[in-house]
Length: 371
Image (cartoon, rainbow, N blue to C red; front, side, top):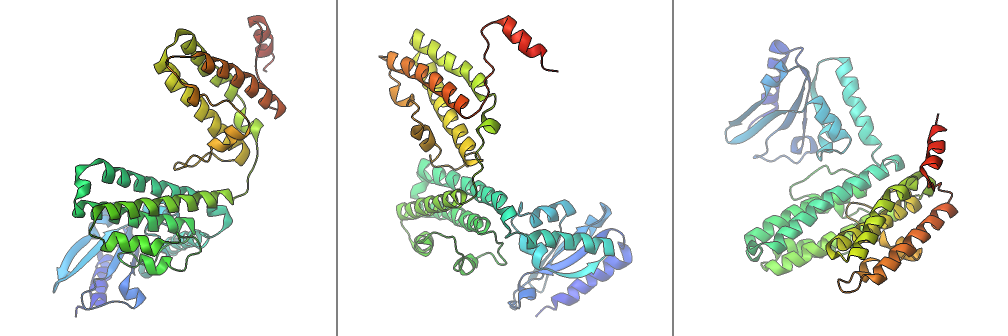
């Protein structure tokens, strides 16, 4: 069995002799640190270069069939890991240091660990929920690939896409629970098992993904797992404190959006259905989103499943989209006029000032007063 620490000693000695000012940190992590090493285990070790020359100590090699990868992590990448902007947070949080160039380097490194130690605080919740959402977008892309290609009928293709989905689900759940994983590659489930926020049927979905030989079953499990995780993210968002602010979110909105409403009225007058189609949907969904932001204090998530539309309906705004009809534009035109009147009244009632003028001279008086 290769003495991996003897290998590390050779590298550290070389750094001290030839690169004493060029390497800030050398550390190791993984199976040897966690007491799980086997006769085939390599030593997971890394370094943080202090200069461009320091990167020259990077080395990949094999000794008696055991692979080694002494790889560099720049300070800015280490900071991203500490902030959960890159996934391998455990490398910074749990490594053992083999070499430190200076007290300043050690203090900087320990500062990164301090960032990680605050990962579970309420102040980090919004950022980590956003990261959970962002990861789920990749799952949706994988699902689309599975459904849109003929290769989806192939077991190998489905399993490959499903593996990516499962890995991203684990990442998303880590962010959602405000934790990082200490192990990967086949050890996610044991770490997720005791998390408070996870899909109820997580194990069943994963069993189907890993053991089924039927592509449709695998795709269905992936869709259900992704959907359940999306709902968990939505529920987590809804538990956050809401900061209602119409004046802050909607100042200037109506003045700008009125141009699109006028465009929609013109499309109705000219019976131009293509313009009416795109503008009506854009106006309605845009208003629904900003109403959500004004009520909740945050914008709908990137993977919102339509929850933001509820407020639009609750306030009684007309459903422009359902009125799209290439043979009869009058109901849509009337609805747009109703929306304009209702939105003006709504914003005024919420204390949002509207910059509307009856003449150029009136506007000039207003604008000249802005000093």
